Image 1: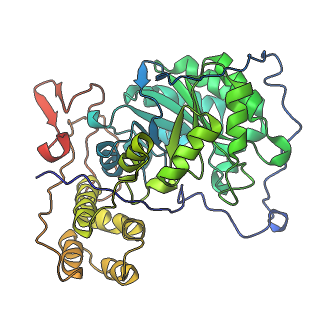
Image 2 (image 1 turned 30 degrees about the vertical axis):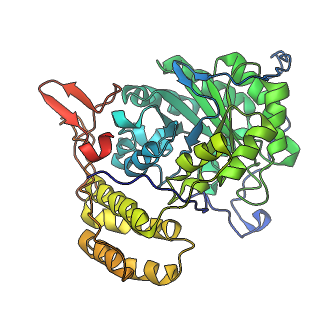
Length: 437
């Protein structure tokens, strides 16, 4: 049975693993070094004339065409997995990205990293995001990413978390723009698909080269650029600096699409980002957590200026139940139940007695136990039919990486194609009717 299309907002942290530390850098023995003087990596690139686009035009990334003002789901560690992506796609996400994947982990055959390569046809268009601290490391991992069949390959130069930066990955590359240029060139050399980049404005306020970097990336042939409008030093503190997004659009690029990210947590903010910055698309992170409806609600708001009503309690429980069921199928019941616990706070935020419900949802160790808590929490809740929420079947692959996670499907899914099914030899992987609509 299909799930009703519903609506609501939420607001939590993006990249749960990328949280700022409260310990001053100066007090750490392994403090991250200050960035060097500005690199001349982009010194040989010309300055394009500013482009003023007054009429809406379709945005194109490689072979992909999008309608005016598309909305993307950001790559978020431990969040942007297939169960959540499938929900966001149903509710209107125009493009999505996987969790970021360690190139070193792929080369070391780490099961957890290889599992992140798994994508399904109903998620398309989708990008796989990779990060790495070494040029050769990222280059050598690119064929593995390419073979997984994404629509684009995205390079992460934005994650501010310390353990990533210390490996000279993520936002750490912003300290060495020549290295950034070489990583991008290496990935483009190996990839058979469009390459995109996600970055921050710069390392700190003294090294914001976003306009120049955007210009450099466009002339290198990068298909699109996503910009989180904060520096690495800001982490997730303070306001996102949308004025820099406007500068990138007006002075940095001519034709390369620019995707804005940062503080676009609700439909009004999404509209404001489009209007104030001129970006071609908006990427949602924190605003989508526990809130797959935001894409549908925001599109309705952009179209009509009126915000649709929020979902009812019953509609919300239906979606949480499906999310839980897919998590359990994806990871095995025990791991799925445990992993799902981090989502309840955002799903039920704003409801009366939500804290009591969250506490009760943390107790069961089985899917049936969690569903019983939700269905019984509100005395006047109707009888809700819990969907089976089956993920697409996976085709056996004798070379699939062995996983250490309990009950994780052993086989990799079949990439490629546009429909709900795809022929693979004599076996067909098919989406259930409830997820094929």
